[in-house]
Image (cartoon, rainbow, N blue to C red; front, side):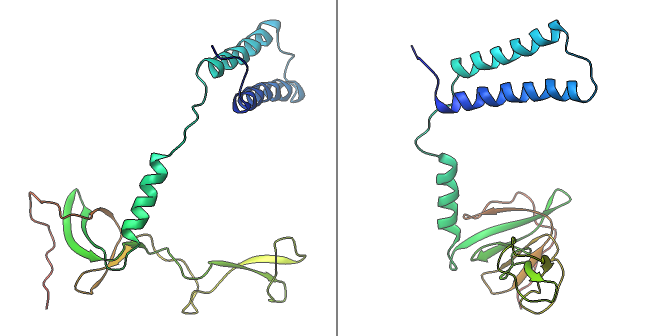
Length: 189
């Protein structure tokens, strides 16, 4: 039988009691009526129920993370300029086209430089947000232009063609078998 509480359980219960207390004080300070004994009892009962639930079903202590392992594996697989994968561009519920991709599919909103910078009123660079008279302004892109790229993805085919797509897609590192022909078919010249 478990005795005592873990630090996380104490923090959770304290937070819940604090939230409930804040609700009561908010009601009182905003001109609301004093909670009736019945409401006070309901608040105390809810806090006790939560405390009992935390005690009976504690937060598990995990020693590894399948999610982190998946993200790491994905990064290792696709952070390879020579990786070949297959992308299926989908629109109107149909596969519009498919390509073999060399390298990684990337977001059109990925940038090489920060989108914003800190400057003083006279345009000079600021060192930190706490410096006086500093403002956040849009920074130019590497080509000297300003603005925002559209949502979407881009990639390079195994033949070296650049493709952009704004829409749904499926991607796999193994080719998938299509049961219908794609709507758009490219011709390689």
